[in-house]
Image: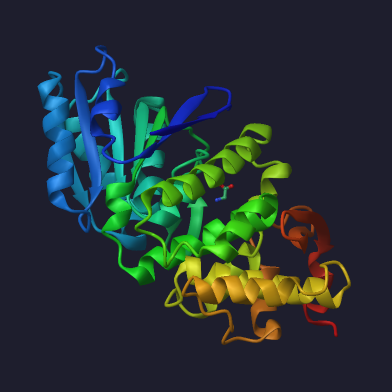
Length: 353
Ligand code: GLY
């Protein structure tokens, strides 16, 4: 088992390894009498039962609440339903909420834990590679408001994250490769050595090599932990995690969310790298390397929409502050710069030849 400490105001551990239930349960204190398991109905129910049984053996009263996966988990209605269940279960402030699922469950569980009685302890057990390498760590949570994604939310750190690779084994290649897009992004922003590792030994083809998988995830978490600790509330340096995301979110929205997050981020990385090379910011050859590594990880890099279409979404991006949009621009693998582009100039900035 590997362990990464996240040095936020209230620090916590991220555990990465196989079969983490005993270690996870051993960290729940005696003060906690009740545990709510919020779990994605797509997760293998035997695993949820394993966690529930282990907690019950420690004398905890457990209630498991299944959630519809995907963005449906993040509606105000779903939030209200969960709050009612938790309140009827009489969860107190010394008790614990577990989130078990992909990114949407991490987002909902985080928001529930941060708002129920003004905050109860949260343990995140991500079950997708994407959630393991991104949403489970860093304390961002969110609900959607109708069509508007992630407009309601808080910063609220978990007390523990346990990335149990047994979950990741169960993912099909298509879902696994979505997580690879976030991993490649992490290497791109700050771990050039990991990019070289992935070039020599693509994770998608080597996903059954559990030591390798654990090493790659640990490198991503270490980097994310350092970035989050330097800017817990996303006021500057943490923006770097958005490499490829501004255009990625535009692609997701333009496709009516038929292109999923990881795939949209892969295309967003390609677009921003192409723009950066054209402007003479990225080293020549970066784009070709990126395309090869994405292809080796089962990710389509060609975007079906042109930059003029995507610019309309980018102009309405929720990161716009004071009329400017922070854009993360790659220089080479392992190095990016933050540029502030006026919203009134963003279309020209994206599309100029
Ligand atoms: N997913 C980006 C962040 O945690 O800031």
